[in-house]
Amino acid sequence: MAPTRAEPQAHEAPTTATTVAPPPPAPRPRQAMGDVLILAVALIALAVVGGLIWTAVRRRLLARDQAASHLGIAESLRDMHARGILSTEEYDRVRRSVARAVADAAKAQPGDRARIPPKSG
Image (cartoon, rainbow, N blue to C red; front, top):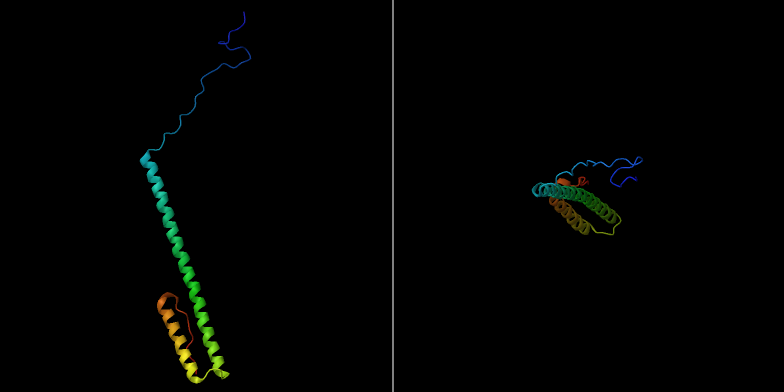
């Protein structure tokens, strides 16, 4: 008699119920919401800190450029006065104006004051 399909044949492995680990329990909605909230706050804080660092670096670089620009102007004025292009009155008036601009820039950024050498002569 031929074996029925319900009985395993000699070359087939008997069918047994395989045990599969149950899936992990789904996170509770409040716990998942708390995790997302913590992650969002951390990302916002990181963006704020990065923005502050970027602003400080940018401000420092711009202050250096402005100080170098003012010093370059002062040197050009001295040269123009020495060659006779500017009269003494014009030179003094423009020099005071540049000195006032440098002082105003230093007041605007007290932490980034440019080191300006004292007037010689």
